[in-house]
Length: 300
Image (cartoon, rainbow, N blue to C red; front, side, top):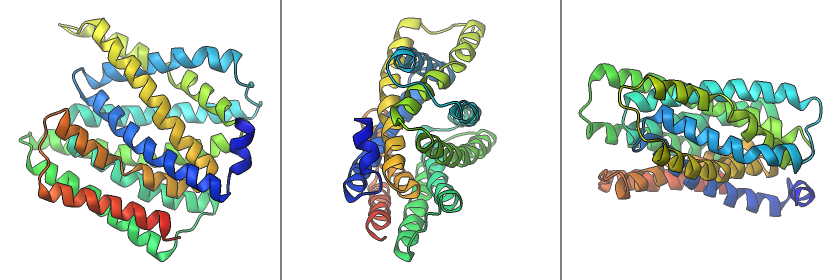
């Protein structure tokens, strides 16, 4: 399967598959964000998720996929650092702000910065219509965050901290998307990168979560937390694996923009499962996000 995926990279078939993978990653990432922001403390949930996908990836990395080439270890080291910083910004943002406010800010900055970075690193270029679509998508995502903010009654100090961390998280999304796209292209077998990514990435935060759990006055029960972590681990495989394969098959910038239709799915998740209201203006903005993604995909 690896040989087939590599063979269709840069072809029309690869572009079509990348489109489907990026949209699927958007849905999965919205579910992933909701899981981290849901019932349990976001730091504990993150630790449970990382533990689950790291444990699942370990036998695949060690015994199934080809071992990484020597130059990949330095790439994995950089990847580990970038993702740790991203998780810290995400956890801090979720700790201080509502999911439907923080999530669009994080995801709104990501594609804009990623497109610029992909142009500098991979030589990708957007056409005028694609830039228009990116602008529409980005503005609509930020407007969605502003509309959701009006519904919240939060301390302004907490809100300021949440938005600062969300902006930092947006830049880190761009950093890891671009860097990981470089990493998955640097190895012959893309599944080698994915298996070792999840194995290495799952090493730190389980310990962080365990320390925080031990320090809590009334720590939550472990079993439901680990169930959520297991589900989150599966979702993480589907989300991250899909977007990384999309960046291997087609342009990094376009895949990143399509993934950021995730706030549409996030709003629907917030509406159905977190009991958050979605009004006519929010529905219009979600349509604008989708329209921007269409312009980016077909405007080139």
